[in-house]
Structure formats: C-alpha cells, structure tokens
Image 1 (cartoon, rainbow, N blue to C red):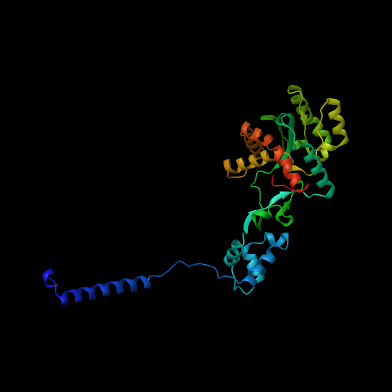
Image 2 (cartoon, helix red, strand yellow; image 1 turned 180 degrees about the vertical axis):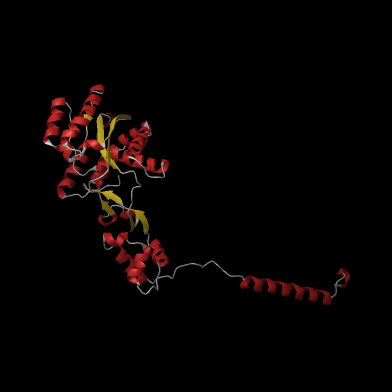
Length: 323
C-alpha cells in the first residue's frame, strides 16, 4: 500500500465516505414519493367482480348505464367509485362502445332474409352491377346521437347491446340511388311536398328512376318495403312505366349497401360543419355537398362486398349482421 502512496488509514477513510454517500443516496431515493400505484382504483374481489358483470349484462337498461351509475346502484354508500367499475370490467374485456342500430326481426323476417341471402350469395360481380340500389335517409341538421353500451367485442350484436331502429316521424328526407360505381339521380324532399306517400313518391321519385333506367338499360331497381314503396298504387305505376323491382326482404338495411353511404354522408357533414344548420336552405346545400363528395371507389367497394353481406346473413341464420 505504501508503494502506491496510500496508507491503510487513507483507504479506510475513503471507504467510509463512499459508504455514507451510498446510504444517503438510497435514503433520498426512498424518501421520494412513489407514483407507480397512484390513482389505481380499489380492486374488487372475485365475488364483487362477478356481481358487477352479472348486473351490467342483465338487460338493455343496465348495459347503457355509465360506470358511475353502476357504482352508485351497487354501492350506494360510495365505497366503490366509477373508476373501480371501469377497471374491473376492463380486466374482463368490457368497454363502452357505440350501440348498433338494428330493426326488430320476427321469425318470418329472419326466414325471408336467410332465403334471399342463400339465393344471391353466389351472384357474380356483373350481376350485382346491374342492381340500382336506392333508399331514403332522414337528416335533421344536428349531430346524430349515439347510444353507448358496456359490452365485449364479441357481444356487438347481442339483443341487449343494439338499439332498435324505427322510422322517425320528423326530419328532412334525402333520396338517392347508385349502381356499380356510378351515382344515379338524387332528390332532397322539400317541406312543401308534405309526408312521403305513394302519390307524391310516384310524382317526384318514380320519374327519376324511369329516366335513369332508360339511360342505363338492363338495370333492376331495388327499394325497401316502406309504405310509399309497397303501396298498390306505386306497384301499378312501376308496371306502367316498365320498371322492374326486385324482391326485397323486410327489415334488411344490412343487405342494402347504400346504407353505408348515408353513414358516410353524415360523418362527412359532422367533420365539415361543426355547427348545426341554421336554416332549411343551408341544410339542403350541405346534404347535396355530402352526396357529391362520395367517390366512385367507395361505390364499387360496396357492390363488391355484397357476397360477404349475404354470407354473413347466412352465418347469422337470418339475424342481424355487423353491416
């Protein structure tokens, strides 16, 4: 040690200083607040977690309850909060998701949908391109409200996780059609025309259909079973004008690709215009803009998806599908 210029005393002193420095550093680190578990909700035991899951999944009403509402219902004294409910359900695969809107289906509806899908599932692209798809959509000028439900990914189409879609009595109707990758005529239903009935449907819409089919011979017309469409007067008008309308199973918006266009238009309006419309004329302008914004690629994609839509109905035995 002497040869290196250090005595045993120097070395011992150095070691003591180093040891004190390490101890000080460790103590300082331990005194620093630790936040790794900060904010973590109290964990429920298995029995309590089972109780939460059983309660949430028992009905449409409980599916739609917020985490806070669930907590207040099961623990009214406030010992468990919303974050604990969210954490527990998250661990079991549940999330708050937008409920799908689906029409009610009877056994007859289910059977008709299944038969239609089986009949058309093997159609060629050329056959699908000859369908003139049509529909109306109601637009109010305000953001469309969405219902949230607590569910797993696989529960998307559970009966208590969907919102039954029923006709709305108020709003402004926009009618449109397309075939293959080409948009056909469209129409914004004016207020002064009143409620859509067979008489004014034949007066306003049917001539547009007839004119388009004359320009594109070979097209077969598709429309749903709305009262104005299925009325005897409308059917007779079609026959007189030489318009062939294919059979369509009731309550089957998931088989009609134009339904996707309505969602695209409404999403486009929400992105483009944050503020709701202030006048009827402004709404008409915006809706027409949204229709014009739809591209050919999307139209062709929707037609090419038809075999899959049919297959999904077959797989669901005629019940609701993801579309």
